[in-house]
Image (cartoon, rainbow, N blue to C red; front, side, top):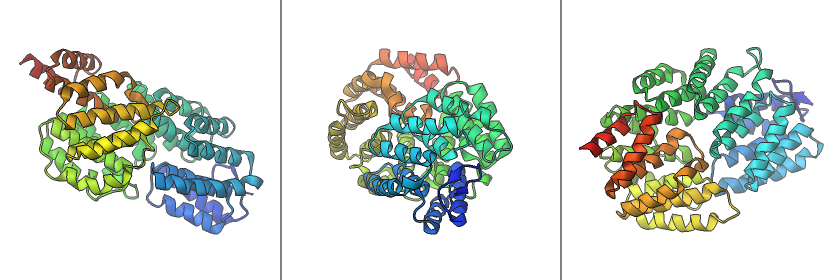
Length: 435
């Protein structure tokens, strides 16, 4: 047995494997670019390390693609074989991966929660649960999963700030903005390079329409992102939203070109960032030129995935934006086959969103408005954040306006202004309705 830096036992007799696994966990917490390399080094040092194989499978599942899912099952098989001599904690991790591979997200989350009940410093269980709970749209679940372990953490425990950052995001998504901002600022004070905590505070400012402060907050931290992976693009996406809120369309486009889609990316989050930002820019009256077409080479290989409903809806957005309506319709047909009565609700909501986007592309705003209204109470099932799902709320309002349903648009923006009285977008819509 070796032990990780949190004192948890690792079933390996190779110190280098344990050291590299520590580096893997550190990288997972910090979104480092070399996280995968550290995990590969751990498996090179000990090819029979069960938890390393399990972690590799989980990382592959986070790619959200069919091809990666097939590789994840191979990692699962290796983990299951190696886990015969592993600890109970490690076997529970393997069971969580098995449930995830079977698309049983509640069972996977429950397995990680069981681990955390006994081992609250298991950062792998904490981060993986956080990820799946996020893509279930379970805001309270995110908040509570970290709240349950935080009493066992302190500044003396490695990675404490990162756990605070996770908790800050759960608080923000649950609507406790004051506590979220306070906790996120505490996390970044401990570690200014904690991009997840930086992002949690940016979310607070987005939801409270504090665009000027949001721009300053992100500007203050960009110099810390020297080793951060693709997630930087998402925080730059937040910066572009702040610029759009102020009506600065050219600045948002410049951020798109320089940071959000500076280089073509296979990462589904990068594609989602790009598609939703271009959609918002066009809805704001901007022209995006050939940028939709530049997305397609990375979108098209993902159309057969139908793994992550949140991503599927954004792939359709990119297709419709580029005028590829027939391909978007074909994606809807594939999603219809996936959205069976036994499937997760998210697949059915994603299907409805894609069908509405296809209608937008065909110029049938009335039907798109009707379809989005049907599933609006279920948008949360798509997963992602309130800020990310807001693209569907805004699209619904835009469709209502185009369809002449001023009653629908008016009620929706009135509702929004009750929650967010300083929201400039909603004020602009209200002014247009009044005019």
